[in-house]
Length: 112
Length: 116
Image (cartoon, rainbow over all chains, first blue to last red; front, side, top):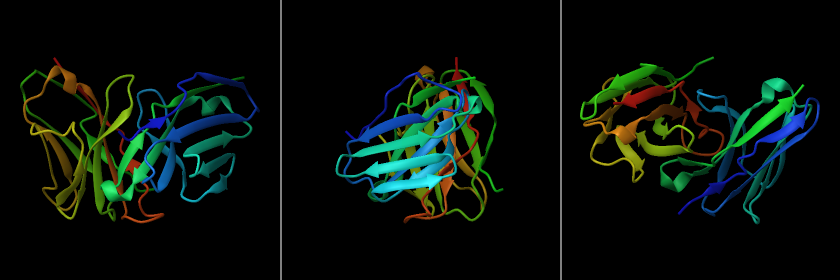
């Protein structure tokens, strides 16, 4: 069974702090990883993708991938109240019809 | 910016009725997907579709489900005989292609289906 696991939270951080979100995956056939943000009742919105081991930065967001440890993380710097949402980690297997396997999400609360 | 659109936004139906959920993927995208999310649960893969045929389907996607690309723009999900447990948010997604940097999936706003 291919699984993506996340701590459900809530993760509460003060405004301006760094939020750290983590994810582990079980399918070693997964080649690509994505972070989506989901507001309540809305659809997943892409934040970042990462394909190679190491860090990838995009504005206030940094994704980290460690394939040996099967671990993906997302750092959000200078957290804003508008970042309060559920963050979904997803793993993609190209050999399975591009199927995305999602984690259950971590709920982030940024307090002003 | 191009986006995936879905209709209707909400659908209420009686158990045993057929429903068709519609999606218009991003115009230059070649891969299409349906996912569902039961309230409070994970987003779950249903099916992927490429070149007018199913590429992959999950265990959820049983004989009650079918997908179709009836014309050059629409992509539909049909549930033949709805059950109470089909109540969920259904998301359509599309991606440009396979392969790194082209496989990112963009999601539509969803159709909330309620089966009574």
